[in-house]
Image (cartoon, rainbow, N blue to C red; front, side, top):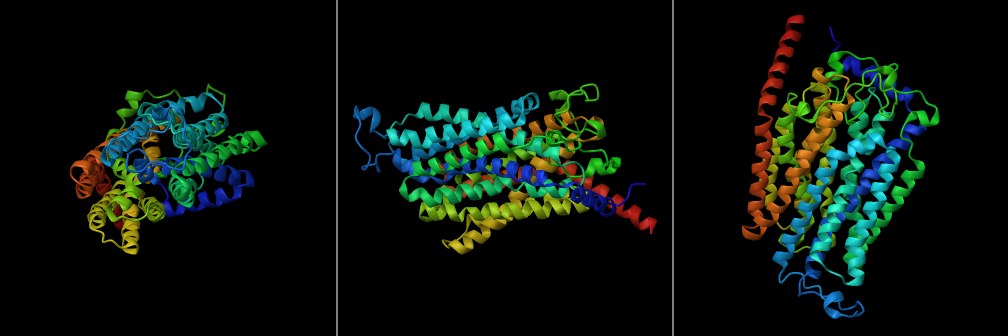
Length: 501
């Protein structure tokens, strides 16, 4: 009979401490901040939307820049006749980015498995930094404004940024095995929110000099991070002569099926072939097909649920500073700093809810309760008064109940789905399932950004929040069969414990 969760988790924690070296800490920090920098550059675009919208309309031209000839090509920034059309185009850029990012996710894992992870990650970071520099800084310095040029750059940026997530998760999977994985990957999953906070901070510090300097600073920091990753990241313990993971981490079937994971590539149960970079193909399982992965229990339901939830979560990511400035009339730099509280709430929510789901060894009920509270917090935030302290508190609460479930689905739940008994031991199944869930979520988020701009332009911000409430409720609806099943399992386990006593 399997031991209770509180018993088998204690040896795992001791195993984690005994195997941790300074190399593990360096890998943790490098992967953490490399993905944080990628998110920081994305956050910059949402933080400066008001300034970009003003620059692209006739109401505000840059009078301090030198005149270049011909005037129509270099000095005219009349891309749109009014701010409403500029806002709609900004939403279109968000949609373009997310669509290209979603498509890239489905293939970037394959690239990372076949090439050196350090090369792919550093190339993605440095190339994306150059694209961001061209988009926001160089075009403004040259006064070159063109809608098609912006669209092409943002497609390329989405594809390049999609290399980040699979690579950092793969490296973490090589270094951190089963022992203590729930705690390690739960802490590590805050990298996206930390990146949002970092991006908002960097942008707000230099925004008074012009939005082009916000892009310049974040692109420079990201490029420097890519260089550091290229020279400093170790993708596997074998590179420094450490033994491969898994030799002393045997666990029961119940432990493997319920333990939360973050990696999409370290689920190989062959203890002698744990690293995803191993070259012994005889012991590696056969890769599961895309349609086979879609047929696994729970994959389609969680993918559809995540499409709705990521739509809401990324709408806050892309539009929150713009909403605060546009709806309350606050300065853009102040709105950028205030938007940090949403990410703070998401970090706390993901940690606490992940811990609760570890104790219960069930995910869906925790998600359902959090999302029901999220509906109430969205309704309350839509009616927030023109007060920064009150707005910040309600914003943090909203981030707690939306960002937390979003982190759980994209990490622990995706890994749980890829480690079902039907595909147990197939690291390729885990990567495929994670790509399906995250890619479907990104597609939903891409469609949502365009819908948000349309709803805001025609109906106003209040209807945007009604749309968010509808999507959050749809998330609960999609996973309702799983909620019912897991609640029944909890009740059944409780009855068995009572009979055993």
